[in-house]
Image (cartoon, rainbow, N blue to C red; front, side, top):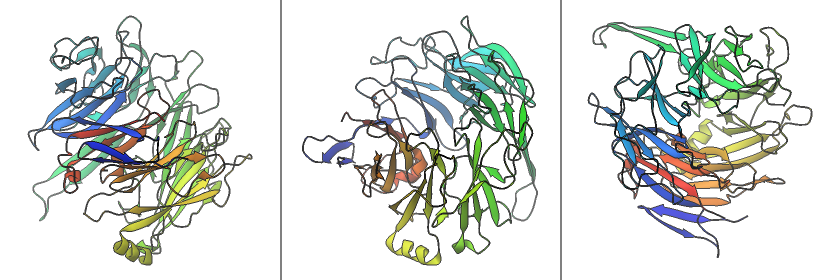
Length: 535
């Protein structure tokens, strides 16, 4: 395996590596005005290359403008500035990108209180620049074209944010995506039409999760009030019952509602099966590490982290992470709980007690399920840290924490071994600057060999890659090094294929807190794209 050392400093790239080797990535710095919220990576113009739609805000609190900027990818990479920009329509509440019209390319769509709107290739986002791709956009106002008159729960837009919500998805893999529009007590379904806007395809019963909290007056408060909110359940689209058709699942903390897709690609209005869940929380992806329960006085909590078919029997399974601080914050105890689904036809798809309990050598901080060995069954990837008083003092002195990664490979009988199949130790430097500091963690194919690899961060200035190996699983030392300034929040670093070369690319989003120190300045408003280089 080839080891590569490359660096990015102040916008220029250099590398040091064995003869005839090349840096693993080409660097493209994309800049917008203001602060970057997020991006959506989709092939807007159907040229086989994924483009970036970046949501960003301009101005300060109380005087914020919401903007979208489009960066089209070409064979040469990405431009430094956007080819299209627009100020988001004031009515927009949630955003998605998908193919909802019969016209060429994908649309940038948003939901408002009165229905579905979209920006299309026939409507401009701003006057086209000389280097903009074909077909050009026509001049427009940024208000969007109204496609559907369908009231939704999205009644009041945020003046400073535009939430991303995957309401466009192809449930039956027929190339005609569906559009989900949540209402208070149901969810409307529309499907792509060959003649024009999406057509009505039915509705399903769907309850929302209310959140009501009083804001009482007191010595420490100004005035009084109340907080009122509505949350949708967590949506999943997967084959629930093993009939080879994609079903729609709505996941609540106490139940799971499954809507089975029929042979004619429609759904029943009521859930076909409701499954009881007995857990405290559904993982939202906003936290990588949960040190201890933090929102009430309970000293133990179980969080659902994965819902999918683990053993290939056609029925979904469930993975949960149990955390307890009964013995004190320096003696946290965690365990991974695995519940295997079985055909029952009633609400008891999962057993009351876990089928398997996996305990690591430290505090298990997350669980991921991927097929590392290619046998069609999901293997578990569980990073853990030893978090005692001794380890805490050592971390303060060395600013390094050892993360032990346990791999549990599912056996032929459809169960995980009691002890890890493989264990890797990865030292990670810790940031003590008072901000969120989370390491990078991505499982993807970095070198195009068809096997899964691991991308992680040794510190705030270097990415490391461990290539998957059919015999050794992963080597003891990284196979790839790439020096690049990393954000303190590792969740702002994502690996994904942006083209068709078979190798993962990396997208990095910087925030205000990333400007404080380092050789690179003016990181605010930057999206750094690392496009994989040919081997």
